[in-house]
Image (cartoon, rainbow over all chains, first blue to last red; front, side):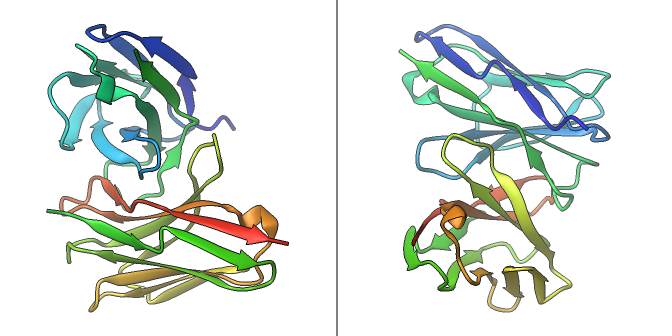
Length: 114
Length: 112
């Protein structure tokens, strides 16, 4: 039973570029949530996708956007990258859009902005 | 705004001792409280969770308690082992019930 998978594992970009991160949820899960984890901090909620729609959004600018596909996989896009976007980006999947269902995380994508 | 505070930020114990990590949450609508363990360079792993209609839950050496009135919840690890060394995060659901708000983490070091 495959867990949550994310790609790529590492990425280096320069300021102003854009990036796309990918996530495949755990088998049987239909909801994907994205989190940003800065060094030494807890994960911060970016947004959640359920039924191919953004259902909830955290305190992140419009430069952060996403998509969910019919197979429940998801993408996170970040435009006009800033140095402060350097972080570990985590994807978590669950069954249903309610956060009171156990969320399982992937290994994350480490994004470095130069 | 919605907030989860976690204490202490670092905790060092001897092998075999108990460890307690405490969290407080701000939103009385929060109804689900998971705990995650994150080893260096690895994904956060769900180790135990509790819902608002339960006061205590135990799983082998790990237990979680919830005090809804005080908006406190705690993680208790008994008979700690070196492999328990990691960063532990508490979390609570937001007001809309659609996202988790995380604490800043506790770095637990267990020395043998």
